[in-house]
Length: 497
Image 1 (spheres, rainbow, N blue to C red):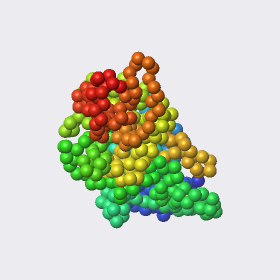
Image 2: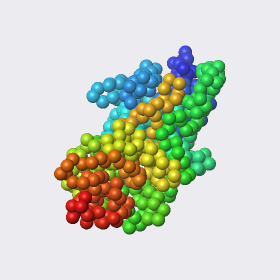
Image 3: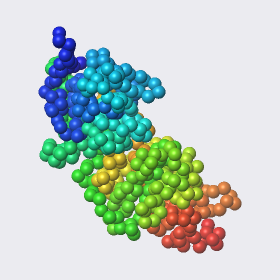
Image 4: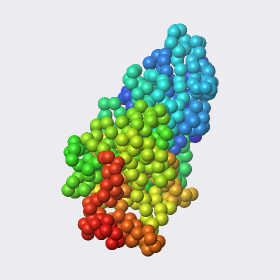
């Protein structure tokens, strides 16, 4: 629902009528214009008008329209675009295969630019679920519709920036705020910190009722019936902590720190999440006195030449580049032993995460929840701090949510859980590092002739000294014995136990 933006009177000339919110976005000369608007506020209908203005200013060349997914593109952005560019202005033709693109005709280019041009003008359509799919065009401007949705990844935004870099192209983002992720961190927060006068960023926010066609009664119904966070987010376009946010304990003021040089003698840890394309890692360094873990680096395939073409050895080389020593690495699910073996053969030993429940020897069926609870506790207690330029993991932290039921209450299911590779890596390493040290096991008596209780018990039961309880040397991959503070190694060697 929106008012009639484009009209064609009797003289055949197109007239554009903008409401006040859209007018503020139209008048903005900043390079990055973000329109945060309530539902049905006229976001998507404004996109083609803005893009037409950019094409007229910048001339022939390539342009981009990107949505979170192709189904969403075909639902709203594409029909709105074609209604203006094809039906009303008759500027060219759209094809959907093999590449979705709108190509200006000769006649359309002449009508728009006032002369025939030697260079083609093409609008490419992309989706943001896969950042690598956006690494081809060199664009003069881009419109990102509904970029606040979880499937519109930070990597996609950065890929689009690279496509715009040659021409220093402008970007329009039209969205409702869905979480506290990258749009808030990379655009809204810097704009707000600049007292709403950032040299490159402009934020245009308006309620649904800015659209004169939006019923005020519907606005008041939503105010009355919806939870406040949902009303503020979806009808007023205000950034609000949503229900179901998993790491709701994260406070940027407490849990972010400016970058500093990590001393080379600090213990280093690495969490890894394996995948053919999305192998990701998060590096932690432990303060020797406070034992606070500082997340200081992240490994993302889209920042290191893509993940789909890398061998395990290439991954390891990129991961270890610049590190003073081999970190104590943990990662992968139980079924991903082949990944761990490949990485170890390439020079990086990786331990299987400790996801054992503290009251049983069986693997906990809720191992993800156990890991989440350990990360949550570390953040809540101030034991886990993030260097403030780690945009990927910070984006994930403030978007990681549970699905809501029809009443708006969180369920046990994680929404779009396959997109959070950085948090999976974090869960592996923090869950392992912060596992309970005083856990109990029901070890029972071993079968006759197969050693005693000490030989068969997990090493945690009788307490190896030091923080780390695994027997693998993280630097060499060798199995090492740790002297037991009770002299149990000697007793074992003498077969007393």
